[in-house]
Length: 317
Image 1 (cartoon, one colour):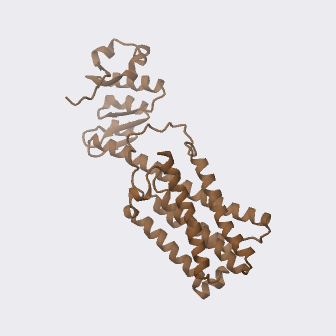
Image 2 (cartoon, one colour):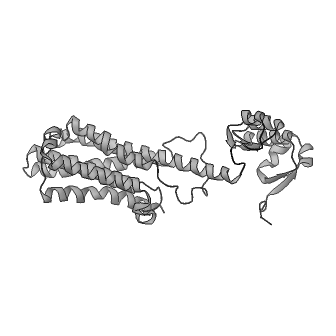
Image 3 (cartoon, rainbow, N blue to C red):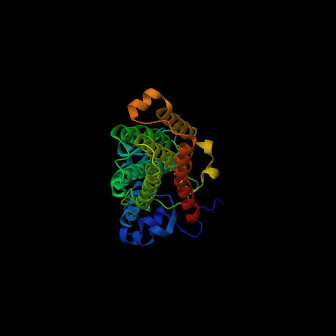
């Protein structure tokens, strides 16, 4: 009635008892339901699936379930009805004895993994942009566009606040529909490394372009340096908003679905304005007040990073 089996096979404990491990391995990937199995059968099922390179979770509550719980990649013991032996052998204890909690835990784990990747993507792409700005400026005849305290500000505040907000991002749409991640898969797999590089390069190019425009137009060093500093900061804010989802546009997930991110971006933007326009902060960070035109150019050009990341997601759909 629940259509659990679909077109897959069902094996009973009696049939399992008549099978060798090699015979079980031959059919284990075709079976979706095992009925009336003993603890020994559980151990054989775990072994057969692991021999097929599957990551196996096994539930159990009795003393005799301990070997299967220990053998499995993720042993799940029952917190209410489970014995002390099964709990000791398990990797995880289900406090409410509700199997639906396992599904919720898997989804939470996938969300955490996704958010770690987003944090890495955001931080390393920002660092790539900073590095490109510093390395490329001398090749176009410019002095170093950022001073140490500005770099420190970018690394601690501009990277830090939105990065922390990414940690509480909600689950991706369809997170439970995708294939499990292989244990040997690297953190930079599935295009993460490429995204870090191209977004970082774009961030560096637009920031340096704004600074170069200010440089060749005859503006003083403090002004065009402030423009580079501001453009880089605003570009990182746009990147933070765009990478909140790996597949959906910001308009789809909603700007305020992560209120902490909105707060982080707003606070960073306000602090950046303070660095530009508050006199004693100008002295500390070697900035100067930008004209409406200069600030507008920095803002508009920095939006290209947000637009490019959003466009990339749209093209991959």
